[in-house]
Length: 264
Image (cartoon, rainbow, N blue to C red; front, top):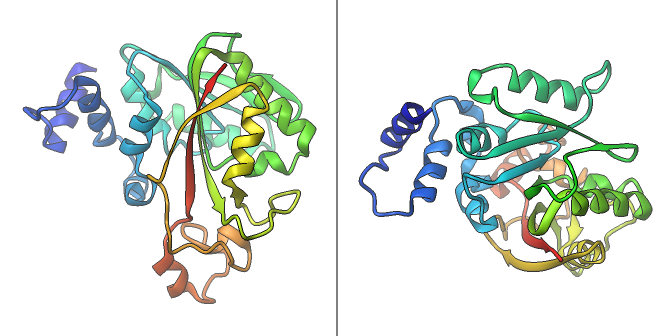
């Protein structure tokens, strides 16, 4: 594994750089040759280095990623945490008809670099076996909270309760999601995929967390959140197909909030 990290560091031009060792390891993981080229192409929209550094990730942590799906962040987190930490990918059980869990299982089976990834069960609103209570340093979720809103307030509270339970006291809950301008209405099911930042902060804090910091790392002022078919009109989905396609490509990916909470 050390040779793998060194090779990635060389590829990224990081050897000899005057930086903290942890930052070098994270940049090396982002530069890893095992990453999918299509995923690397989205780094400019997702800002993985800045986002993970903002959350305070360290290579000796136990980290949960909720609903990793095809493993965009897993490609970075797995090599970064492989030697000294633990990555838990918490997804649906792998049974017929559950595509998210199957996609993630296929990912972790695709390369030995993922062989130490542990599997947890995160299947709102019915099943949670993420990790033991008070055992996790960090829980991360990328563009998933708007899906939990569809479950209704009680079920959303259950999701957040389970996140709170697995985190150690002072552990970090990192949230990235599509941001709805405060002047626009958020409906009960977040049908556009966008959420009010203030509402997210209030909802998560009500579950026993405290907002530690927020960042504009993933902001996109070009996105006005007023698209037919919601956030999915934008790249990479482009749900409206050829209708205003060039306009949506010019906007780029959605405007996103980046919020760091800690367990009280």
